Image 1 (cartoon, helix red, strand yellow):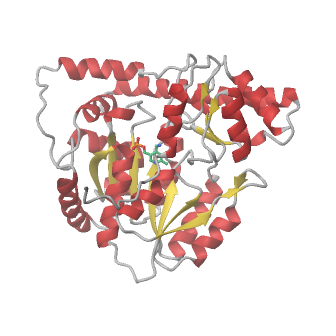
Image 2 (cartoon, helix red, strand yellow):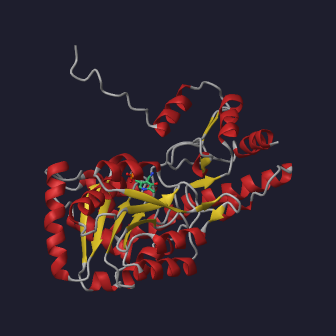
Image 3 (cartoon, protein in one colour):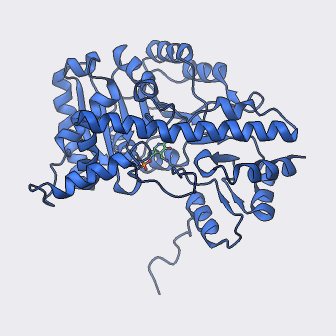
Length: 404
Ligand code: PMP
């Protein structure tokens, strides 16, 4: 008899379940539009050429060893990461007001931030962290696990397949003063819908008026538009505007370092003095959870970030990835128009980044899987990176059949 007999059986992670179902499918036509990982035109994972070069340098460095990193991680990596995120000329960087800790990729950064805020954010009883509806499926569970009460703000407007901006602003206005507002820096997951710059300015104004605390999740810098600065615009704007805020940064997609778990957590404070206090507490949290972060991915990323020639090559690799995805959006759109598929499809090309929220219903998603061996999440989200020149027409034809 086990002491855990009454333990409730938790549901399997739906995304990882989808990956397993795709792997088990033997139909040659099968298409994986589930997981948010870049694929090349042959539907294969892609090691960025710049990463291969950086790995070569790391592996042949006579000083290489596998010692522990410091608790806050590799200094050359975290400082270059902060400059990449905020821009070297940002007042937060120039005035030395950003504290950065290396984390277990973006997930670890979101978690560390959540844990810190759950423990130390000074807040009255009814305060919450608000994230968009919908959001990345893991957000709810991460913040729930650290004991932060959460709420949502409207984001997706099904009628326009775009942003519900009025609903978003109203929710920020009605949230209790001093709430934590989680924002996707770019390439919103799962919708692919981002605010315009004017809308970001209005969001910043509302957040400031209500003394809310912004928390950016940045998982796709450079991967969305192909331009690192453009994709960091909202974060930089908020930092320049003088907010105290935090940012979770991931190198999973933009360097293709998914399984190496390279990421960073940044905390921007008003004063350099507070920065030291914050770092001291973050280090205690980090020490108790992972002791110190994994070294290899950070060394590879640091090599790219700190070498001018490699950095330029990285920008080129980013344009390759984002360009292929943008091209697939166009091809998919063109094919749906050519087929005369009922409904409007301009959102496919307007949306940005890894994902597109198609507007397909759960029943249509089921038919795609059962009849056409096409795998996507039940909410109708497709990973654009799963499309390529050989399967995009097949996918469009299948969509055409299920929506008629
Ligand atoms: N936040 C968002 C919005 C994401 O889409 C992702 C990647 N799916 C992450 C965070 C973190 O991913 P990782 O831990 O692999 O960096």
